Length: 114
Length: 112
Image 1 (cartoon, chains in turn yellow, red):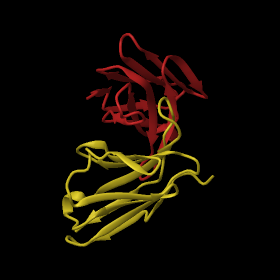
Image 2 (cartoon, chains in turn purple, orange):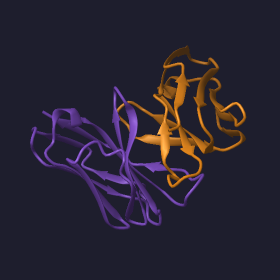
Image 3 (spheres, rainbow over the protein chains, first blue to last red):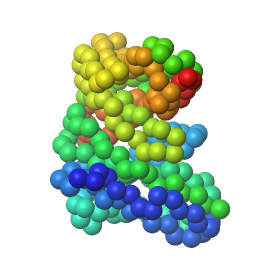
Image 4 (cartoon, rainbow over the protein chains, first blue to last red):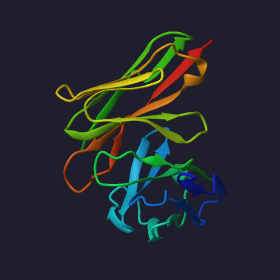
């Protein structure tokens, strides 16, 4: 398996534009997580899914953020409209099972909003 | 909410030195993870442990459940070990299985 695949690796966009980040989890994994990493706050959980169903979205900062998982092999994180303070590295991770399971991370998407 | 504290925040070492990074957490966990992140790179899982000790090459991770403390040791450190090391707690119970709470990370620089 190629691991968790995220696209794009880098995204530069203007304030107010819509941004869509994509993630393909490892085949067979039933949990998918979206994290955001900034210098100030480190890694933070935004939302996670179990069997394609959103379980906890309490980390989503604002209504401008939304995430979907239409099937077991694909998820998106959308920001609309984007703002400069959304600039960060966004990581997707997947895992199998409920507890004591290793999470596998994608390479991340570095988002810059100017 | 579990609080995860790492120390030190920054660590500089000479090649060959023995390195220890510490992690403390405030509430019960089901597992603790050590992650490695190279500059500009992705995040790699080094260890996941819920008790005792694990070893992989020059890396050793230990956990003391009673004291809510874990350590990551690197023996015979090398410049390629330079990275950010992140401790993450997998919270026990509730509905948030699999959700990780992260420490702020330890920036390790190993000089030749």
